[in-house]
Amino acid sequence: MYLDHTVLIVLSGSALAGAMAGAVGCFTYLRKEGLLGGIVAHSSLLGITGAFLLGSLLGGAELAERWILPGALLGGIVSMLFVSLVTRATPVKPDTAMGVTVALFFGGGLFLLRILQALALPGHRVLRDYLFGQAATITRQETLLLLILACSVGIGLFLFWKELKLYSFDPHFSLSSGYPSRILNHLLILVVVVAVVAGLRTMGVVLMVSLLVSPAAAARQWTKRLGTMMGLASILGALAGATGTLLSATARNVPTGPVIALAATSFALISLLVAPRRGILARLVQQRRNRKEFFPFPSQDRPGRDRPDQIGLHPGGRA
Image (cartoon, rainbow, N blue to C red; front, side, top):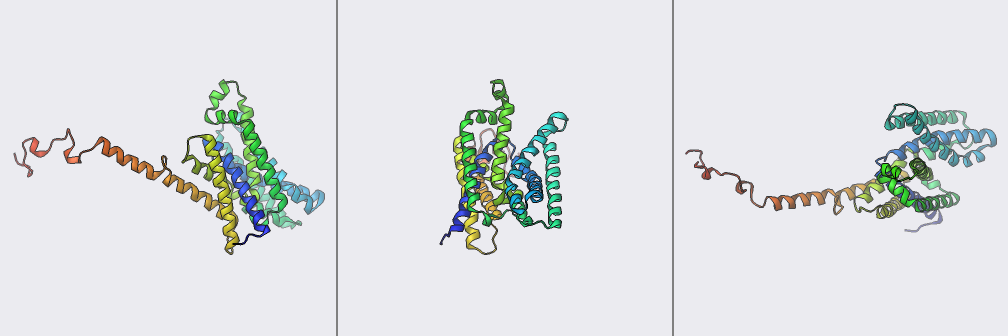
């Protein structure tokens, strides 16, 4: 198959988005906050539509398109700050606060999107690319931006590796050891927001959560070390992005984003099935070995069980 320049750009952008989301998703997976990325992605729609509307009023379609990604970043950060404010100022639990945040920000984003469609502002059709994803329209500049964001996230994880690792596994011990848990929490949320915003053009706000959850869940089945897990999750995320791009490039009318989501989910399902220690098949084999080890005799001949002929009864039940 011949890969032209456009396919290579889309392939690189999708692979970078998948690798970044896979690495960051490991922290949300370990903290049992897998849906955090989905909340950020859905909430960013309000920032996208708000920034586009403001840019259109101030400078036209060109300025509006430039403000989309900063608006998405701002929308994701504000949504997480809103969740933190609600949980601290009210007795509402975090999961309820997240649900309220999604309803407020995503609903507000859809409301503004409908208004923009009714106003028919120049360039408003590009907003649908961020709602459902449109990897085929990724440009070279956007791919370079993805590379810069991926490098920034990688440097941040490297610099705060020990602190984030300790905070993810045991936040209470991290706090008692003198680490600034609140700062680490905000830093981790910022990294998640950057990873989500970077992949919105490829996956859209609806399917972006699959790149954060599935590669991390698949990688966890193969290793117990966080470093190995992050590396494997990055590879699986990049492989899912490349798979979706190549399939959409070779087949007609095949959308890239949904195929990437299906590929990432397939990796997770296969890992859950065939992983050597934590997989379903491995557990079934281990359970069968345990039965043979602890119960080596057939059920009717196990020690401690009285057979009919041992208590003076004939097989027919007569004494």
